[in-house]
Amino acid sequence: MARVNWMVLCTNTATDTQNTSQLSLLNVVNEISVHLSKPLAKGDTVNVDTNIRLATLWRRSDRAKGEKVNIRYSWGRKKGLKAPPTTATIDLREFVQNQHITSISGIAFDEPGEYQVTAQIEKIKGGKSRWTTVATLPIDVKISAKQA
Image (cartoon, rainbow, N blue to C red; front, side):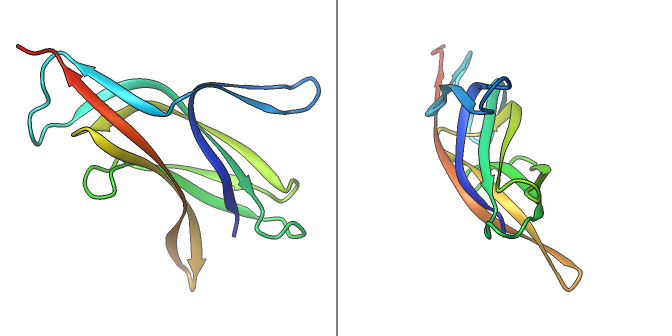
């Protein structure tokens, strides 16, 4: 089963296409600050437009054996709010590792605190699909609002 070497949230990425194929992560996001025009009422959810990318390095579990896996990323809190997942296929048949970049154009929040990005791999056994978490990236969210 493929594994995640690392996951990073950032606002932009750049790949050296001329020489090394090295990936640069620009403006790494350690926390997200949301500024609202009014306080968030209990039970309300706010959707915020973002310009964030999730950069992930996937690697073969066995260097000698190529693999192709279905993956998904989701955003939310451990208990509570969860956004619909984003799915993709990671092809590790030709190369031992694969950089994967996913754009996140909007994120939902319902309260400040710790949220997380979760990476999962699909396992199919006996014709049944099951998603297994292989990595999580915690991220603190701060919410502030103008006082009336």
